[in-house]
Image (cartoon, rainbow, N blue to C red; front, side):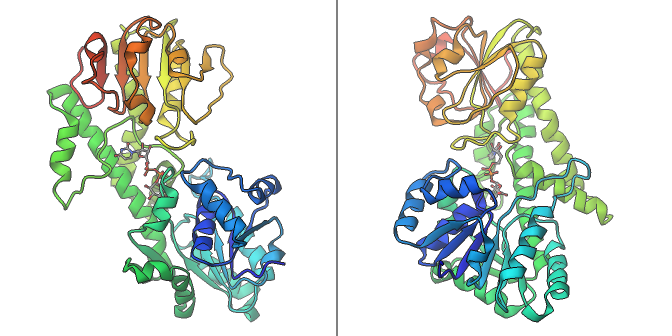
Length: 437
Ligand code: UGA
């Protein structure tokens, strides 16, 4: 049996990054997941997600004997520290984050953990969840004196490993000081580098996670609204973003205008925060407005495409370049690109898509996913760039001039090289630049 000190329960994207990260710090990690197929893949060094550098880091950890995988939580009974990173999907019915996976995982851990073990919640959870879990543990296993600690993650998909090794802060929330110190010790490498550690209570820690994502979603939504203004009154959104972002009080990041935020985090977390606010009678009006604006943005984009196509999409063939919710990931959850594909199909258009990594299947006669940009653009009346993949930035559109029906690009990410020699032969519209019609 593994002589594990640290256990990670739930090896999705957050758990796996946490596990390989701690393993590379020299901590012995045992990973537990109910999905036996996933465990078998991981044992062979095959990560279930696409993430830069992950496969190599995982292989090294396996070769060094620092990481192991099991479907049986009992294999982790020697651990004194458990990181729980199971999913907390939004309930369709209530809008709240569902906690059943988390509660089940914590109960399983409590059954096998030794006295005084620390259970760290990495999953994003409604404010007050950790306090509730602590009460349950105290009630169900008083003799074990187990401690709940909140330690939210701030990893971005696509750069998750880099983010893990270069955090801007570590947040550790818990009622018990020794338990917080145990978690802090697992991040000793960061403390040595002077990375700020915020040691606080569980509610503050949980709130930091939601507030961070909601603030970033607000920043994106703000620049998107200014972008709409620029499209009408004139100007250039990139220069506006640069002009405000150089003010260190504002900062340059998350000011790229686009088709709206998506992915598995911002939509879910903003909704959860709004729901928490309402439940407690403290309506989060800014966040609620952000959600509304972001939801309607996809419709607004559709209208813009329609205007460019002379109002009728029915029977037209369109190429959609990029399906992932952002570049460098294969994740299509809540992806604006996917919503736009659906909307176009509903309007009766034929859609041919291409993404370097992401796959998206929809059972619709008018839809096909192609394996090259050229194939997707064949016969297209419009080329819609929906994800900012580097492949699209460097793409030489002159190579597909003969295959498209019309040389029209609608660039929702402002990645297409408008200075390229072929650009004058194309009609290029971009989000955040004045509309041509
Ligand atoms: C986000 C946060 O950035 C992470 O800190 C957090 O840990 C993570 O959620 C999470 O809660 O797990 P992620 O969803 O991977 O990370 O993606 P981001 O890079 O933050 O992008 C979110 C969305 O905003 C994407 O749809 C992206 O295209 C959009 N975005 C971002 C813009 O439209 N413009 C920008 O300038 C930045």
